[in-house]
Length: 188
Image: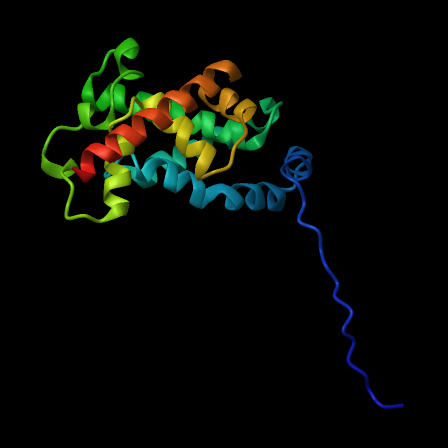
C-alpha cells in the first residue's frame, strides 16, 4: 500500500472567551494568556486614538486590571477589559490635565490636549476621521469605537463604560450625527 495524503481538514474550534476565562480561573495561565492576546491589538487601538504618549503603560494597566479582577468578571471579558481600559483612561486624563471628573466626560480629546498636534494634515481620510472622533465627548467617542472597531454589543459597552444600555444607544445616535457634521465641516 502506498502512502496516501488525507484531505481531511481537522478544524480546531476557537475556544470562547467564557471557556478561556473559566480555564484561567481554574489555574491555566495559558488560557489567560490566550484571552489577553486575543484582545491586545484592540486595546492598543482603543488608546491610540486618544493618547500619543504613555500608550504602552495604559495598555499594560488594562490587562493588569483583568489579571487582578479575573474572579470578578461576571459579564463579558471584552466588556470588563474595555471597562478597565476606559476607567484607566479617565484616571490618566484627570491626572495629566487636572480635568474635574464631571467635566471629563463632556470634554473632547482636542479640548484636553492643547497644541498643534490635532491639526489635520492634508486631506487624508484617516486623519480626518481620527480628528472628527477626537472632537466628540470622550464617552461618545469610546462608545462609537467599541461598536464599530471592536464590535462590542450595547450591553457589553454598557458594562465597559458603566452606563445603562439605553444610554449607549443614545450615545451612538448622537455620536453618529456629531461625527457626520464634523466630517462634513472638514470637507468644506
